[in-house]
Length: 338
Ligand code: PMV
Image (cartoon, rainbow, N blue to C red):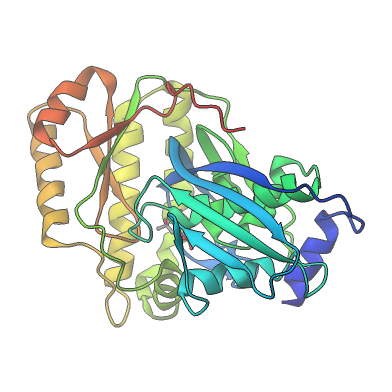
């Protein structure tokens, strides 16, 4: 807690009296091409390695925050439902808000509306914390820079540090013990033809949170020691692929990174397996299409759902192979986040 408060003190102005009546913000969800798995500091969510993601355009979280003058407790709504105080999501949000309260007395009504499934490996926590910190910044008129918002979003969920921007974002691990250099950095490159297909196989809540799964993997998986080296190679391959627009290189490295991550988890004791039989069937379908000459690749996070990567020229064929697929073109959306 002490280090978290130190970070807050370094970033947020000590006098912030102006408070608007309400503030709204949106943050996109993001999908890691090179995954973050493992922390060097559990409280500050400082990662053991750097990672790189692509934001999901208009798929993410809207957050509206209204200060409550009279209420004794915060009111947290998720997708139009008021959540009980003992709900795990409410607890996560209250814990995060506790870093920012000026006195125990100020309370808020916070409404989150997500257009992606919650806690199903679609980075819902990333967009939730990124939207919340932007709404707090607007409400209190802190006027923070995106890199500072990224550091603060990271205190809620590591991957939230990458949800402050559109397009490709690298989260540099950094070296500072308080993590002042551990934040997202947007890449300049755009790739208009790039498509992401969300293949939702299950909307059920995941059996184990990514936070717990990360801890178990590091503490028990003997393969974990090879992970930083794998990440370093994959990151450099992915950055190179993005700069050359080499889709094969991007897709194959992304897929290999995800499969290695899930092999690490399977190596934990007891094994952590997020895949369902349908996940494996979908992977085989992707590999079959590749054998037929169609460049399509997948990635998988802490859940059974897959995200497919392909180019716009192959959209029709991919959609006929996966009729339920929701296709996102992150660089073609005209969505204004403000
Ligand atoms: O930020 P967290 O605690 O939700 O962890 C994210 C973990 C992965 O989604 C599997 C990987 C990543 O880099 O987003």
